[in-house]
Amino acid sequence: ELLYEVAWRPAALDTAEKPAPARGCWLLLCPAARAGQVLREQLATAGQRVIVAQPGKSFRRLAPDHYILNPSDGHGYQTLLREAFSDGGACAGVVHMWSLDALGQEPATPADLRRDLELGTYSALFLVQALAHSGWSILPRLWLVTAGVQDIADTSATISLSQAPLWGLGQAI
Image (cartoon, rainbow, N blue to C red; front, side, top):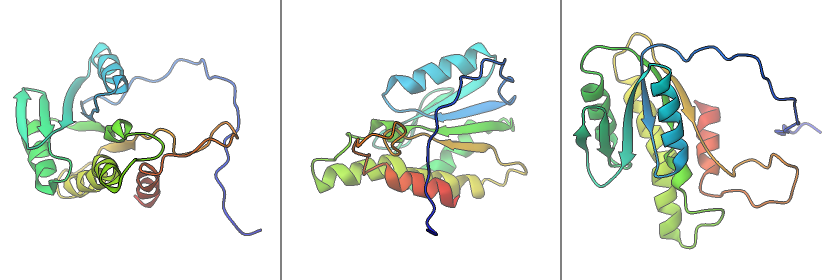
């Protein structure tokens, strides 16, 4: 009786014109999945500067607004924020989508689960810590993107075990 439960309800699609995204520079932690590319294109079309960070073995800058970052290296996130925003421009928003590269509903091995947690929960925690230590007077909004964590269709679909902790971290933040 006293338990809290998340419930999804169908709603009509809101066709009203959406406000423009916040002005400034957007930081996207994009996976290999197409979702990151689509969001990047939409923001760029709206005239926004977009900085992309992808997971890799070590921190490096590939192009002026394109970085590789080791998901499990906490210092790399601070370096990313310092270098990417060295011009003093404001960060309008941060979208963390690395968890979309999770291996699926049920990781095959403990190593798969560890990899998925590094891409999702651990990297998001390092990102939040870097934002908190950035020294910025106004912190940007943060979106943590997951897939398969909540059953939205009232079916018996299997939830994504490796992405569920990211959902919990998001609730705590």
